[in-house]
Image (cartoon, rainbow, N blue to C red; front, side, top):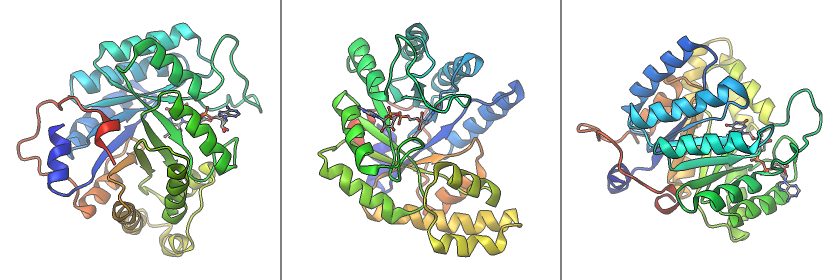
Length: 311
Ligand code: FAD
């Protein structure tokens, strides 16, 4: 696209934002306003997560429609296949298609909280690769299909090498890009990228970056994903943990260092988990100086294919 060409011509990496469907109507309106403002930062695309079940999944579809049609944002819709009848999946894919969305992040979905072990829904899908194959079979090459990657293991599997084998199966089923779980240890991440490439996986790998809003949220998310926190991060954040402004400033420096290391290693696209908040992400982007010069912003992004364009 023009945005991508412009960023590359300026020698700048590109970036994208993830948003999730808010719980209240007011929250949705606030998020639309924020999305509109964050559009001004020049993301190449945005992701809307799949709010599994009932109202939230419908909201995901609605947000995709609004982001595409009203805000002119290239959108990637997340879609999970647990606890979902095929008809619901079909409806969601049809809505995405009709909204002009050409990117789906195909996921298995988290296991339901009340059950200890995940079980496939009768007549449904077992793994994300089944969903990738299903979308490919039904829609050919209409959608670019992303899948999740885990540089430090996932909730129900700590075996990173086995997860790479399963990642390869998702790619062989038709995935065209990989978005990773958040991480804070760049060395571990780059080591994982080398392993993924050594397995013959050559599609773009998009690192998931979680900016730091507050100390409590930082710790909660790191514990939840069980990702490794480098020692110097704790040393920098611990002393200021009760001062949110200082945490954001120190956190920004740490995340910016991490992004610089990734860019130096040849990663040309960064994906930000915004948590529906603008400030921490904007601080990182401004410090990295990768916000494109949008004096004459595009009215609408031109069609682009992340699998061909990135990395
Ligand atoms: P899979 O790739 O299917 O893997 C699930 C498990 O099955 C793994 O342990 C894997 O090793 C194992 N497995 C895979 N293939 C095989 C095989 N052939 N044999 C044996 N075992 C196998 N959740 C949401 O509900 N909504 C979202 O919007 C959402 N967005 C996400 C975005 C990103 C970038 C990431 C990283 C996660 C997201 N999740 C989301 C969470 C995700 O749904 C969970 O992490 C889920 O538990 C795993 O999904 P997956 O697509 O990685 O599954």
